[in-house]
Length: 504
Image 1 (cartoon, rainbow, N blue to C red):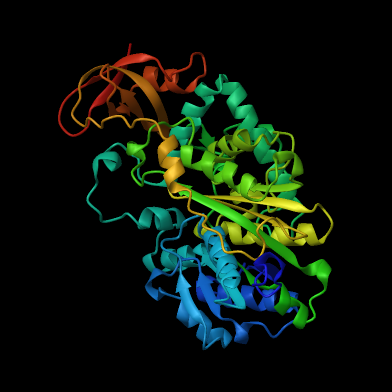
Image 2 (cartoon, one colour):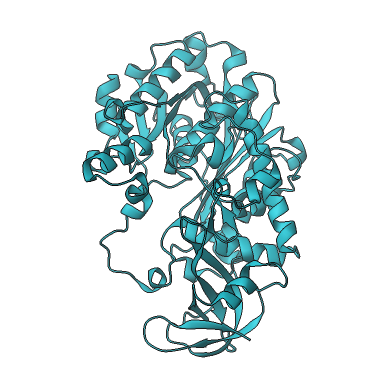
């Protein structure tokens, strides 16, 4: 039997990438998500030398939220590009790890001989969708925030009653816990965020497909101003994902043999390595900790091991960047220095944050960078949900170990074994406690609306307590950096559905 590692029919490569930005002056003339996906795949087809789309065996779509009424889009897209006989499907949810998951699945499908040409694509037209909704409702754009619209009308659960509703409410819990665990002061933690984000802005400024081309200093990123208002402590507007974009990106995965048959030059072929995936509990209150992620660590370490590379072998990385805590955790796992860019696209603030499809843009830019001689090996790390889903993979200019062999990328059992005990959630606790982590929420004028403390009871349980906006002393204690709030003592007081935190 032929060695699959030497069988070019089974070796997965990327041969075409495409990206689209849509900035219509009239939102009624803008492309919807389906239109952006079609345009991105046509760009990828041109990049690969034309003639690939109609012959695709598989069309995989990252689920979109901009025009939810149009879902599912996979078969509609397959029909639009003429891939009538293809297997069309979309990701389960618009999660940030979806493009890497779909890439890994495509590579495995080619390795098993189940497909010869696989397309992966996604898009969000959130800017156009929000503008159209604002026009129809005669409101301003802020009232049409698509992420908050997703949860409107739902009965608030336990965490929502304390303000923990969307990702921007939750990721600061990891940020503040991480800073304390790293032994950083508030100023040091913010400086690290600013340095990483400043380099993101520099990369985006040199990347035509990025949404924002405006370099920012580290001070610009972290300093609250009228144009950079605080969102959820310690994050400012320039530290969070920019979802108000119209962006599409996709890529063509095929076998090395098919690439050669179609005349793709060897220098334009990028090899797909092995990936690894693991996730945390869907309920972020059921995590073992907030200063690290066992599933992220397993995902990243295993990806490097599966491809027989170390951080020193990596020329380029894309460390997912919805919020600073994610690349901060990831770079510590792989040993990536803060003074090297952790992106090839520009990050979700500057490159653009099209919900679940950011990493399709990162794949496209990584392919272009490797083709352009910027290195031979690149790591792509994706994160989704509420620091929930993790998936990483390696791309290279030459075959990686295991090329041509299907690979089980599920590392969940190992991640579960690495996880510590999960504290019992005690929703009605009152009494002494210590701060495990926290955040403060801000109004659009920059004033503090209130905050939330994740507290640990003397028995080791976990509970939530709110910080009223009018409690200026506690808000100041949590945000001024004079002392580290994490680990400090206090008391959960009150009764009913919303308990209140009082610092000692």
